[in-house]
Image (cartoon, chains in turn blue, green):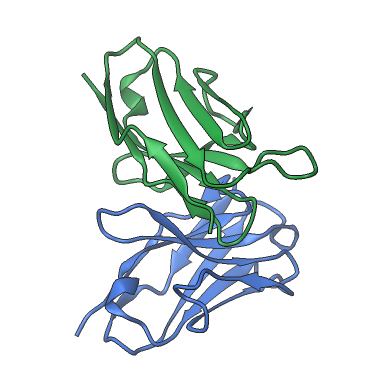
Length: 114
Length: 112
């Protein structure tokens, strides 16, 4: 059974860093892209990061470029999203998803507030 | 960035009837490889999104064949035949042709 399980969310102050993890199982993690998508409370979906199967290429929208860093450890079947200099507008549920979104995690909440 | 525009904002459907949701992209989603990179997702209340349709017209694994996707290079339709109570939620179209990947604003489906 394919599973993606996010962890690492929480309440942080503006300007703080936070690192999310996405533990994968049930498929060949090293052969798949990994995406991070977020959803602010009551809002729609916003893609925030992608990484290719071997981790050599990463992509971000302008809203997070320079602040967020996506990575993956294929030996540990785990993906990561390092979020730096967090802002109130980064408050959202963060999901990791495989490749084209055929599998999603349950999401982890990140709240940025003083 | 490619803008994805969905309509309507919400739709109310009687069980057993059909529903259609439209999505328009600001740029052609047809790749030179012949694949159209539009996807449809459903987010049921309190749940993570799930993939319904990939590459415009392909049914994702485990999705009932009451769901179908069609379209052209920039105009796309998700059709739900014989709507059931379990189909309630918010439907999103998304484009995975180029970065940044973008989604429509969503269409809420309710049951009458």
